Length: 300
Ligand SMILES: O=C(O)CCC(=O)C(=O)O
Ligand SMILES: [Fe+2]
Image (tube, rainbow, N blue to C red; front, side, top):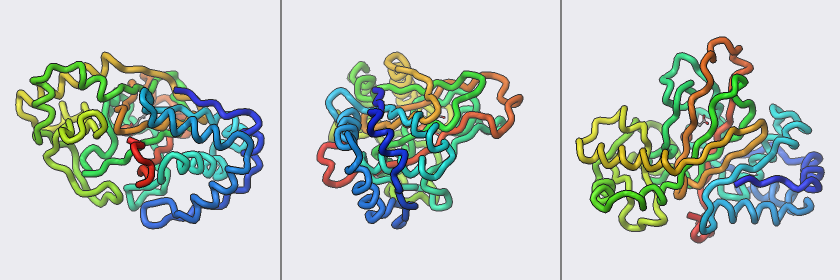
């Protein structure tokens, strides 16, 4: 669901003096969130835009949003700290920004590496449906991607799929297998704010079938050793996710926010010929994770 910024709000945001942010451990500091909020609430139509954003992410039929920040990016410069502060301020209206990776800045670069595993983050191939930080006991409630540059060769549309809708289309026997602690994926090392390592894990959280995480990554089908029946059920889920997928191309300044309790995400392959594109011109996204506030009620 696309959310445009009203032009009078854009005009006000361009001149807003947001201070540099501070961190408190892995989280954006409370003082920064308060400073940003008090600057933004004075801007015309800000409150209604933030409310729409929250509603689109958590309301009945929602779960993801593309906030169009392209005009702000153009006005401020997409590499300018002032632009990144505005994106951070919008993110903080949804939930608390944090970085699970102690050695990375708050926003993590996702560039293009031609020699990396093509199916993984920053690889050039198909990035299959997944949730981020799938193997933490508490994955980020939201994963967000800010598009700095799309693939100049025209590839790499984003893909999204409603995880609970895909699960609901599976036969009961498959859902029963997915609810067993028989799955695992990846390593877990030096991660903050996402709980403990979850291994093995059930894909379906039986305690809260409609609201909980669908703890899934289709990457486990190739990269994890799974029992035959459990792998077959996971493959069925991966197929249903693809059947229900939507896809779209992020434009410069587009800010994709995904509620990980509702939607899984991924990306189609970049266009062939990435090795001919200078590194500085390749596709670039910035990634930020969000933790729902305790008072967000059923933000899930
Ligand atoms: O490149 C993309 O559009 C998605 C990347 C992604 O999902 C990730 O790195 O976790
Ligand atoms: Fe991801």
